[in-house]
Length: 301
Length: 280
Image 1 (cartoon, rainbow over the protein chains, first blue to last red):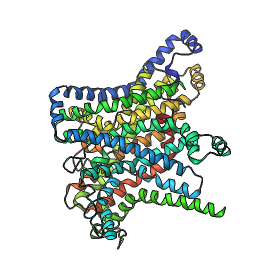
Image 2 (image 1 turned 180 degrees about the horizontal axis):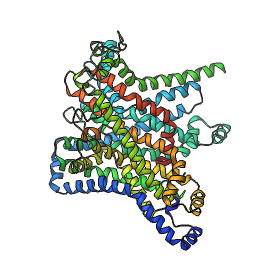
Image 3 (image 1 turned 90 degrees about the horizontal axis):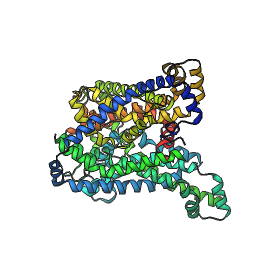
Image 4 (image 1 turned 90 degrees about the vertical axis):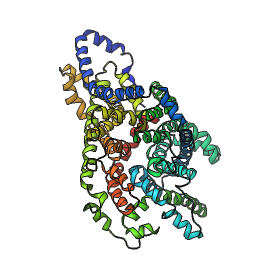
């Protein structure tokens, strides 16, 4: 696989450098044009990433904004929610994706059709579907509780009014939305495993579990791990699943770091908002570092 | 033997049913609301008792307080999506050409920097970006959202286009150079025709990203006449007595174009990412 950090960034090959030695004015012309072609992105990056981030960090330079942040009664709860969200939702999602990738890795025609339907949550924008879930889970008028009432005669739970349930529902919405994508990735991983390995395992009389353990897992283990890390990064930044479903409520008890920062911005407390971003970085940056390392290693393979 | 096959099939169907319900329930619920009268929708019915297209009529005729600017908001969404797609393509194609074909010094750094931005969750970048847009005086103009979306879309765009560029045979460039082609001529006559298929896919990616965006849109825009449809959908919930049946009808109209495009491009959407981010 040609990884993003690849060939031409390395030292030029001997053949190439001998050419460049004879045509060096030409090469500088090429370099000048290269810089010109790169300039729009460089400009974009300086104007809309470097300046904002620098300015933001400068705004968050004062230790007192962190004191205010840490003393906010919902802060600790928010950090705990974020950790629960990332660890629980992502791992649950990946176990489901691993299982479903096995289910959909099947040549039956009706399973092919089912897999096309299965992609719908991924293809549809979040807002209508999350709002739909929000009304379904409404304790008084929602579909879920009215079905529970019809079946049992008892009132269903307050799905979005109980903080623990509400956070769980946010996780469920998150899983619903991104499960198809990761299942597809793992199906692609399974497709790369040579069929002969399964045949050989069958000849040796391997059980289903042994086939998974000795053929499937060695084949997709790395992919599974890398995907999990990438999904964790994106999940830390999942604003929609929490904000559109619970709005951080009830009583601001279901916030995650991604929604807390935005909450401060809406309250015009920019310093606290930036402090929230800075506080999230120890969580985000190691994972990003892992991904960057993995990509540059893939380059050499 | 036949019995064994039948039981295997039955087992698969037993797994398939919960998958189908799990996947379709929230989507079915949108549809159910969109074709129900308000009282019927709020009664928690599983089926529409008197299916009606009235809600869609109310949406396209803008017959509700939340819908007064429906067509304007659709136009805003379209404009912002296409501007994002076009600008992202312009910036990313140039950058990929410079990094991959011209081997510009600092290209590796630019790629790393872009990738780093790609991995940092957009929700955290939103806060400094919002502040900067206010300094630039762009808040409440469509350019604030367009530029934010270009920033979010271009790292992945550059990366995919660069990978596609790396696969093009270098001999083509060399042959053109021997004929005396300058880098701009190389770009126009050799590079663009070859990279065009990838550009279609990447342009679509950026366009959908902007169309679907909620967080940046609601931060950057607030006037009823300049918000996108996504933000307008959010406004529905500002009232206690929200017209959910109209919200769902509008939501359905909003969701159909991107869903159709996703399905048309789904092969690319997956392989593009597997080839890059995940496989190693």
